[in-house]
Amino acid sequence: MSTQSKVALVVGAQGVIGRNLVEHLAALGDWEVIGLSRRGGESAGRVRHVRVDLLDRDDCAGALGGLTEVTHVFYAAYQDRPTWAELVPPNLAMLVNVVDAIEPVAPGLRHVSLMQGYKVYGAHLGPFKTPARESDPRHMPPEFNVDQEDFLRERQRGSGWTWSAIRPSVVCGFALGNPMNLAMVIAVYGAISKELGLPLRFPGRPGAYDRLLEMTDAGLLAKATVWAATEERCANQAFNVNNGDLFRWNDMWPRIARFFDLETAPPLPMTLDVVMADKEPLWDSMVERYGLERHSYKEVSSWAFGDAVFSWDYDFFADGSKARRLGFHEYVDTEAMFLGILGDLRRRRIIP
Image (cartoon, rainbow, N blue to C red; front, side, top):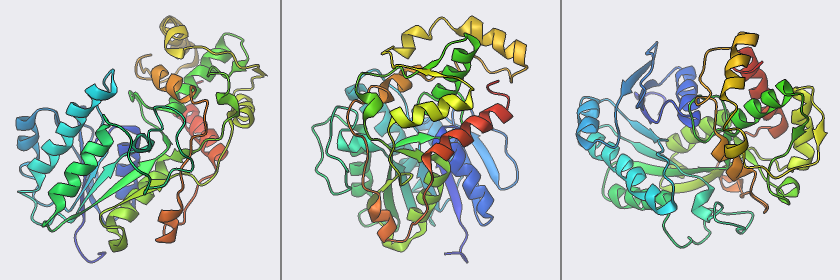
């Protein structure tokens, strides 16, 4: 594989998953990288960005029609919608549009990697079987992750390329303007708590503070995703990818509070999407006072996602041993991950 050209098409290149995947591929040195997103980006070195509306079939065909050199597609795009049923059509359409556009023009296409998650196991619906395994039975639809996987399974038959489905837990890393960024939720919530002279209170449901869960570091996820896409034994399979350790918020939360030099107080159930809705003027004043990078409150807000994660009053973890059995042995300490991301956000002048 190392002697062949490798050209990655990263779909959703500006999200927390896609951004870290682009950086990892570029750092490896033997990949050319093309990033697709609605916002586009600055091209440099081995990385070039293409602006495209994946929901527009004609725009997708036009933007991808000349990318004949692509060998690997890494699909990590996502469109949010208010209900589970409404998530299916746009998210399936975007994947179909990408494959329909690239497959006919890229004769060297070798692999399509699909980013999924624990929704495949019904983790978003309520208490589910833990640890979840890749072989677990599916749940009652609708579920766009499953529809996307079924599309790839069917499309791959008789073709010269393979697929993989990567299933992380909650992904933590650096990205702005992303609706699913728990690290940013914690960072901004902590910074505003400190500004108001408040202790750091866990805002989730009663019971969520004491349950077992796990996270997936975005850098670790990038490594695992590329590994699965280039390891022949991984062809046409799904893999859970997680940090490799479990934690409870009742132990992690005080450690996070110490990063902000804050005390904790007993948990108090709060809907962050509601109680943080009026904090934009305060945030704007903090940007001025502390000389932060000028990112809008909307860019640093992922409150609805935080509400979802902090509502899990049931265990939330999966078995990651399948990837280890096939050769992926990396792991990340979750406390170090949280503190590292928060420190990075401070260095970048995103938070004080």
